[in-house]
Length: 40
Image (tube, rainbow, N blue to C red):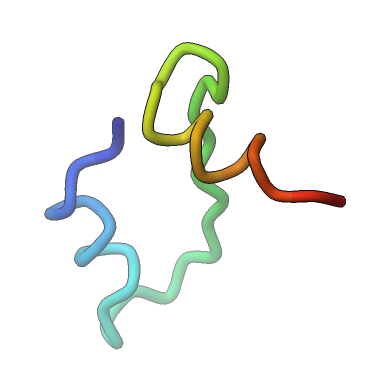
């Protein structure tokens, strides 16, 4: 999982870098429940 400190740093107003975060959806139970349970 991606730490909250990393997400806060990336979303801070000082950050000028565009980013895409990726996780292994089927390996992380929380991601699997949130993403794969949504229709569409």
